View 1 (cartoon, rainbow, N blue to C red):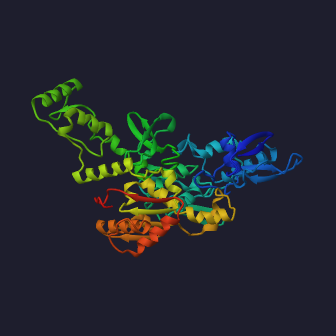
View 2 (cartoon, rainbow, N blue to C red):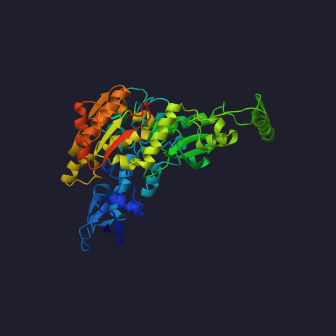
View 3 (tube, helix red, strand yellow):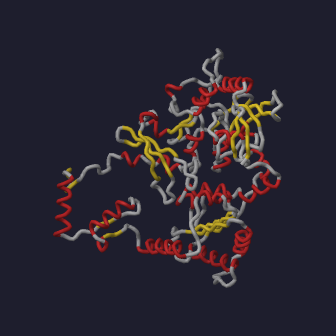
Length: 499
């Protein structure tokens, strides 16, 4: 920790972070746009300006960007210095020159970071009286709406989409002072994490198009914490409801699980909840009956007849357990094939009694060598695939550390590591979305994938059985051996006990 003096008061800040992060963590109000805790600093918006002083005797100081300045021991800054306040006001006025000022009809109104920062900065009067720059918006598909005229050029969207999520079809196109963020042509965003643009964007450029079908202002919605139901990772969400229908899903930060981001399936895959085909009342022989009547008919059926209960892995644990309790364990079928149930039981037994443990997604991001056996991670657990995209940066980041570049200085780190990637080996039956960042891929039948796994185990431990000779096995074993935090990912998708 470092002692930083802000406007004459002392605060303890993390010495490994920048001043903006430290000030926000200390509860201080300092406006910003381009910085994001998951993306680091690039100093694009110039909105987090503060005045830094050399020592107690320095009365003039100099204006610096808080997001680009380390929180070093003894640092002295002023947030409310008159010159700095005027500087920030001029910056926000410049950013707002071409903004349409359409807050009353903007989907982001009432939960807009731009609104909050504009009020915080004190900009409340428009002096610009000339024509505004006008863009043509793009159709980016059924999930994300595009309104480019609200853009303030913070670059968050392309930094997240291209550098963090690995997308390639969204970019910044510029000519002089005209910067356009979008695709080369209209079309559906191809990345499976494109929905995070809705929350990454500090303005109303990218908004939730599914919300537009039944739009409700945020203050008219009731939000409740929930868990995503679409895979087994358990990403934390906030569910927004109005008039008995789900209107939207927002990310709910959890350091160990989903962090700041969700996959598109988890964010937009909620309309089934509002389906007219859902059974909302008790039915008997196709007719609506009271709950008491339905309960009596069910009791009669279970008492005088033979009934079975068919569960489903798609249903909740509570629903399956209730049905199993109702009909009895001997008359309950889980909905899973025996072979699949056997594999699940084997995996649970290995996790309970074996030497391995399940890492959190935050720990997955920190792994510096990964071997995936038989799993299409992007389809089975999308948020883990996003974590793996961060893990391939761990070994190259050592280059930046050796050059003493702070890890929060995103542009400097990326300049240092360029396109270098850490070891990621994929052994899958078919090509996957992660192949583009993999060190090597091995596409084969499940039996061959299992043989490769045994060969890697034998290369790591000569006493382990070997099922074949694979040149790739030695390379994978060396990468796992030299790693500080190696990771092996496997599962039941190939229906193979050997894997």
